Structure formats: C-alpha cells, structure tokens
Amino acid sequence: MEKWPIGVFASIDAGLGVHLSVAQDLGISTIQLHAPHANNRNPQSAQQFLGELAKLGIQLTAVFGGFDGESYADIPTVERTVGLVPTDTRAERLAEMKEISDFARLLECKVVALHLGFVPHERDSDAYREIVAITRELCDYVAGNGQALHLETGQETAEALVQFIDDVAADNLFVNFDPANMILYGTGEPIAALKLLGDRVRSVHCKDGTWASQPGKEWGREVPLGQGDVDMSAYLRTLRNIGYDGPLTIEREIPQEPERQKAEIAGALELLERIKSEIL
Ligand code: MG
Image (cartoon, rainbow, N blue to C red; front, side, top):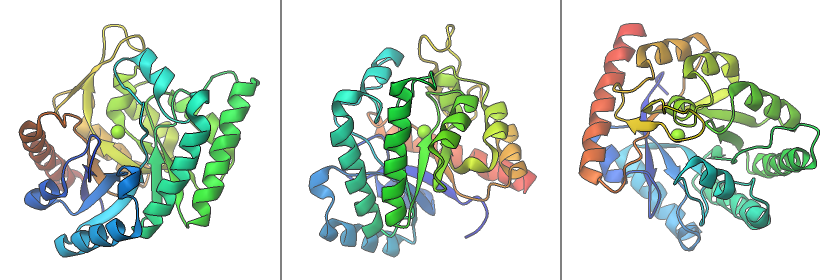
C-alpha cells in the first residue's frame, strides 16, 4: 500500500459514516466501516459488500463497533451510555463486539475498533480491574480471528490510555488516534498526545474541532478539517515522525447533512493531499 492513502469513515445501514458512493465519487481508496446492524451481519451481506469494494477498488482497513443505546448528546451522557464501561449493558455488548469481530473476519479485515467508554481512573478499584479484564477477553477473542483491537481516543488523557493498554497487556491492543476528540472531550493537546502514544497508534482519524470554554465539562465543536484547533501540518509531521504509514481516514460527523458532509470531506481530501505533498 502507498504511504498515507486517504480514507473515509463509511457506513452500510447506520451510523455516522458516508455511503460507499461518496468514497467512489471522491476517488478515495480506503474506508473504515461502521459495523452494520445485526440483521445485516451475515455471510451473504459480507460477500456482497466485498464484491462492491473489489469493483470500486476500495480497501477496508477497520470495522468499528457501535451499540444501540449509545448517545453522544453531552459528556455525562457519553459516560453513562457509551462502550463497554456501563455495567448493565456490558455482557451483551461484549458478546456483540465478538460477533462484529466475526463479521469483520468475513470481510477479511484485520482490525476491529471501538470507543471503550470512560475508563475509571482508580487503578486499584474493582471497576478498573473489571474493564481491564473484559478488554483482555475481547483482545484474546479478536486475536483468534487474526485481528488487532484499536481503541478510539477521546475519553482519556494519553497518559491514562498508555497506562490502561499496559495494564491490559495484550499484544494486539493499539490505538485509533482522533486528534479532534482530544479537543472535543478536553483530554489533552492532540500533538503532545500523539507523541506520547507513539507506535501504539495504528490507525487515525483526520477530524478537526475547537476547544470548549470549559474543556471536559462541555463539548468542544467539531468543524471542517483545517478550520479548528488541530494543527494539521503538525499532525501529519508528527505522524511521519512516529513512523505511521497507514491510512489517513477522514471523519466528518454530520450524517444529517449528507450534501454538506460530502463537500467538507472533499475539502479535507484537498487539504490532506496538499500537506502530504509538502512533507512526504
Ligand atoms: Mg473518531
């Protein structure tokens, strides 16, 4: 694969991503896929989707799990509803994540990813030990499918994420780095975070945002790439310096406005190609 192929976050039947046709129209060669609903996760739909990808010459680089009942309405709601951290949905979501890994295997995809949720901070608490154990169980399972597990950044500081990954101690656990999320959640300056995470970063999002007036208490604002507080040139230079060669996957989370979403992804593509040509 060429260094830093451009990608886009895509969906089949749901989620925040764009339809495959958007990648096709913009000439984008890789996608990350938001996992489809359970009724579309079967061998027939996998075969059909693989056929479409082959026809379009698009490579699938990661499958992202997501769950019913998750809401990103505000930061406290994320804490309560997202990922494997909420205890009352944990068992069913762990089972679903394993099933998503099986579906990703049918799609011949070597990476599954998710927002784990707000990991508790007290390392000596039962709550922390439980989420470490469940993440290790999921890592073991996806390893059986020949896959790595990538954790989306945002809810933790980079320091806490490094500590968590070390505590899970699985050799297939890595990071999907999203620089805008560090800003939106108020968990740290993205370039410093990227340097600290270093070679744990095995996939990335290209997304931009602006800091909230009270970071960590309220949301920052997601904005088109190049218009926010992520220094995109410094971002790509830092990716080069940590030895990252993988796809640059554009994410623009405004699925309710598909025309604008496509136009702003086209703008992001142009910006990334220009910076690539300057620094590669
Ligand atoms: Mg992201």
